[in-house]
Amino acid sequence: MSDLRKYLRQDNTPVTAVQLDLEIESFTYCKWGGIQTASTGDWLVNNDGDVYTVARGSFEHSYRNVSPGVYVKSAPIWARRAGAAGKMPTKEGETQYEAGDMLVFNDVDEEDGYAMSSKTFDKLYRPAE
Image (cartoon, rainbow, N blue to C red):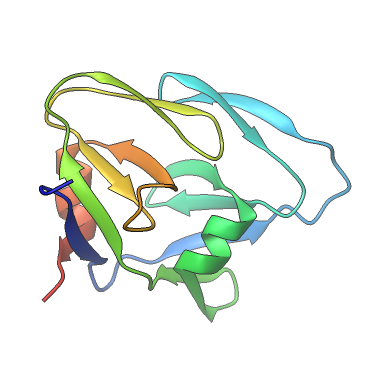
């Protein structure tokens, strides 16, 4: 879409994360207005107190280890503002969003997406130069 813009993660916004390297089939939890599912190899992330899981492939594509248990999102993202409330399928489940929230994608083809409030987005991301 024409209003999709490229962004980079702000400096000094690392996350703590641990890989779910356990022999589990999966587990589910409620977050973002939907049921989320995590499986062996996915990552449990603490993003400044917001705790969630990230699918293994998405995490490995997007994050870089800077010290034990500390990661920075080094890959760019593409995002646009939601014009109306809705639901977005994610690799982990589904996310509900409101008009004005940001629809965020780990690739320009909008295949790996999620949503977040514009307040959180502005705290974490800056336009790519």
